[in-house]
Image (cartoon, rainbow over all chains, first blue to last red; front, side, top):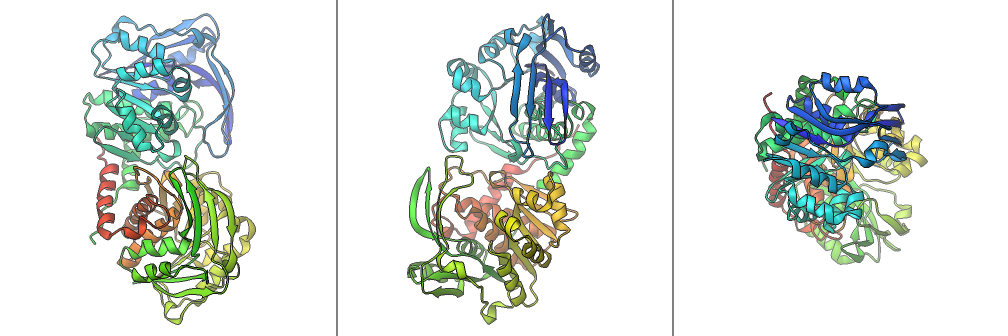
Length: 305
Length: 305
């Protein structure tokens, strides 16, 4: 089935304890689309870059079979983010953000994208996310990402957006901000009353949770030998999740759980290289091997007492 | 089989977003012994309290069948800790520490304790931990807890202690401090070359890991509806782990994995009340029910691709 991703395509300058890169390929739609394409779904990208954007990146994306008809190239400079991670590899320090052509991004869906089965609204202004939702015809599942910036600054638009989506991807802090509940589970249940039937809580090194009104699934992060660069971990997690779902077509509890595993594993590869260096060279076989390892690392039998 | 715990018994004054308690029963040996006793092992405690220590606490411990012959009551005041947790329920702010009679604690093992099968050395001065190891005759497994304070302040004694134990309980930061490795897995493997055959890495809200030279097991924390007070979570985790193992008698990979599940579940009850309020009222049936929930929350099948 087809999967639409609307988000950013960027050039990132990133420094981590393992090295640094300048103007490397980044952006939520980049990590998301490469991650989701691994699972074989038809992937349609809507984003914008400037006329400085290297041709080789466009070739790489379309070479993977990612549909970039919706990736506008406009006059000006590409979105540029620069940041640094310390030894904890937790939240980066943002050194500089230049929105450039992304500042006036207004997502326009090519006609053939409008009947995409699965839709992922990357973390952009909720007003734009709503515009995308309104252009979509009979989707099977619409998912959205957001961040504290929109919860604090555009709560009305965000509330409207949330009421229109099936699945919301959110981190622990954002659950607390949005629900005003101290308990993560109580907060998550409150967010579920605001519209989405499914909630994914991203917890960084603590893994992730999948929550519906009557089900709960909890995964640790995949244990990584050596983290190189966490940039794009959340987006490749989302891409693995949605790419898996779109490749199956069915949305049920068992498939949602496997999709969370797929997202976890996909993100685990992404953090093993700068930019998309590692992610862009992963096959479905690599994913499957690591899924099997992961089950071995986590499964246990209940003892008889 | 029998399990020896050497650690602190304290009176804690704790404030969390859910309320506060003054001079409530606390200390590593307290949480540990109550937690481990749930699994039915013979539990022997070595610790010290002052003559101000309420008789009702001693009665409660011995009423649970915990052997407190090694719990010395000496002239003076009991160890008192006071701390506060913020809404994240992460590491508390210590407001006051009064070691009192604990300052001159020198663990003396009653003769019948010396043949304990399982030994847990709570987080005390490694010089004292070594004294305990030297008093033990033919144990099946010796485990030790430690902290950054000893890694930074008494590395020679700690290194000697580590070389004498079978299992070390340590958190992520401590793995990095002790191994000088950035990667948690690489650091853990380095610690395994220093003596212990088994490493447990405590990761707070991120759960825990069990690592040997050729095996790895990863668990998320049990999802809690409402955290009341995290004090003693690590000790009840250790107590559940060792209590389970001691109740089985066998130390093999499958039992170690189940012991980690037992520790995780035991700690999940502990944080649902102040002091030992919740932990002291838990049965093996409660543990078993939550283990089954936990398996439901975490198990998944590998998809066919």
